[in-house]
Image 1 (cartoon, rainbow, N blue to C red):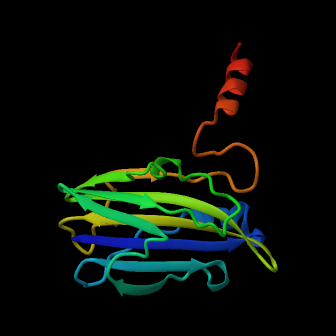
Image 2: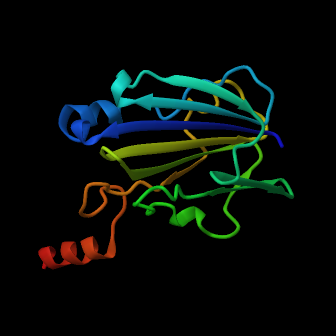
Image 3: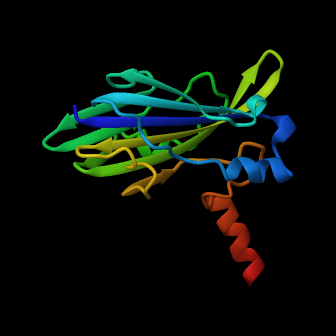
Length: 180
């Protein structure tokens, strides 16, 4: 399968949830140049609050594990289905890819899919933003540095309330009431 996958994960705790730290985290890259490798491969990038979000890189040959993302190819179309992290208490934001067939991607197209999580640990809550970048067909080292052909924003508000990324029906009703 002629596919390059880059998974960028950012981790933080409640200590850096708001204000200048949130602005700093929002400015972190969603993608990085790819290493010189033959497809299929997974380029994993992790950035942790505790290390000042300094990127840590690793490379694995082959496709990503099927318990994380399912990639199926048929008739020149790659279907991408993100599998929710069941250790998370927040499984929202995955509706677009929960369809049994997944998200279709044509050859020479790219996908950027973002999902965030609130996760429990013995010491308390922590948060994670996953950015899954997928290139199907021909690609270069800089493929993910460019805007993707297809983008799915599955982020949800992790701290309570309405999501700033999507309009909920509740938020829409409230907005209509205030206009009249």
